[in-house]
Length: 220
Ligand code: DX5
Ligand code: ZN
Image (cartoon, rainbow, N blue to C red; front, side, top):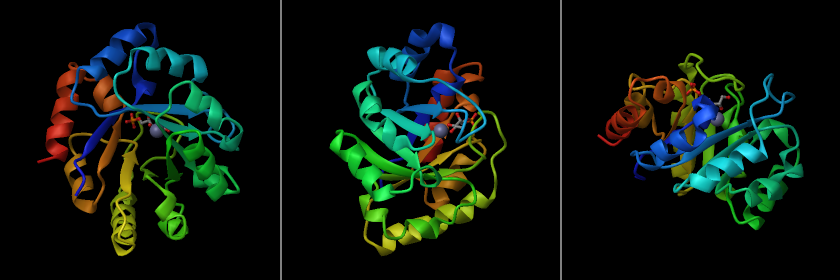
């Protein structure tokens, strides 16, 4: 099994101290930077775009895991690669020609993944799975940090893990939304191996310690 990865969500960082928070993640046990891009159409919120990603990339020493919550992401893939994305995930629900969009991500030199909204059946991934470096399962309705984790996620992870194993693949399963020290172990047991954590990390008294704790729990 893959070692378990922690991806702090920069949505919960302090944008007035972006360099400080980026360096905190660099110097922590975290593995990736999770970057949430929202366009106000696909989700009912607007987060940030290219300039902020460039600013994070300037200081980041770990890969940027870019989660696109935007309609027709195929319009901007090359631009996200150019500003420093290492992994790009697009929502199944946001693009009509999924296979073409994943190829576009690969051609831009990035690892490609798909995100599923909370109740989009994991079975829709069956034919596209071999092309996915990662599948990101939303465990909340996307658009905002700080929401409550939805328990239906456990079963969804199990189903997806079985599908990946049955096809003999090594696809990662990342979980996004409401991940804390209370549920991470159970998420690992269900078969997930990468974890986004926003508010649990950045709203804690000691984000570096919180990341360390999540990483240790996930790999214990
Ligand atoms: C929400 C984003 C998440 C968010 C997670 O749409 O995709 O990555 O930042 O935040 P927490 O960990 O606070 O639920
Ligand atoms: Zn996200």
